[in-house]
Length: 372
Ligand code: OSB
Ligand code: MG
Image (cartoon, rainbow, N blue to C red):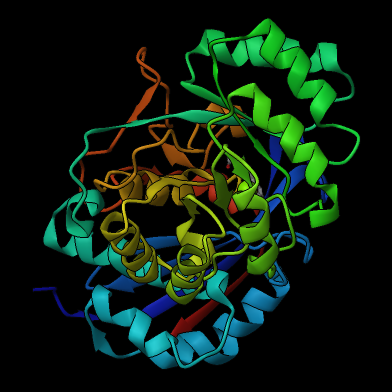
């Protein structure tokens, strides 16, 4: 049974951090990462959440600006001053349609706060069991193949358990063939971020020969039917990311055969309550899941680590060490990679890492407070 928290105060910040290296996907190139950081306060304790919306509507329709609007005008007023359990915050927010990334930031902050007030690790509060989670790394599109091979080599030396490569038309079959030739044994998967159409299926039939763990989000974000048609022609499991914003979408995708793996990102699906519901549904259906990432700061990463400690998260996650993303992370201690290619689940209360207030202050572009 959960613990009632009175949500006394909410602080919203827009922050911007420089990435350790620019990240390029089929939808564009980013050198800096903007995020909204939510801080919920109750009884002298603070819970943190991170909104994973980007600066433009490329991965999703949400942006940091739409999330700010949804939080300020619709979501925060639904919970401010109320006595709630973390597990019921989702129900308060659910009547607002969409805006999952905005909802998730607030919902996950409530879980961190409740875990802190109870003196428990967030992972435990969520039902997590693992003490270490397997770590993979997502590598963006590079200027040329030799740069890519060098980057893969560096990440393998650091100890990552699997490599994910971003692909797009013109940076696909030839590239993967070279990589496979050079690294025949490595656990390898690709992510197209919706850059192809079913008419491009020959590309995927060729990729099918390279013993990939999975092919992530090849087709349009709202096209479950064509993903099912493509999956029927491939041996390699398809994995959906952008196409799964909710439990209902996950149910539809599995019923249609649109994928055999789901990448769960709590920020994409609206928070821990829907993320756990998707996890439970997949476990029941014998579908493997893993936790994706959105280049989060250490705050969002701590949430992802806690979620990935649940039993169904079997495949290596897109949860890498802090240094892969930022020169200096927003939390202490920063996340590091263990020698066995895992990341340890923090054991302190809540997210189990401390926010570096002085750095948070320095990277803040805009701040607003809401008091009950
Ligand atoms: O599609 O998984 C994606 C980053 C930003 C937006 C979308 C995606 C990604 C990644 C990075 O692949 C994963 C990470 O945070 O390590
Ligand atoms: Mg993806």
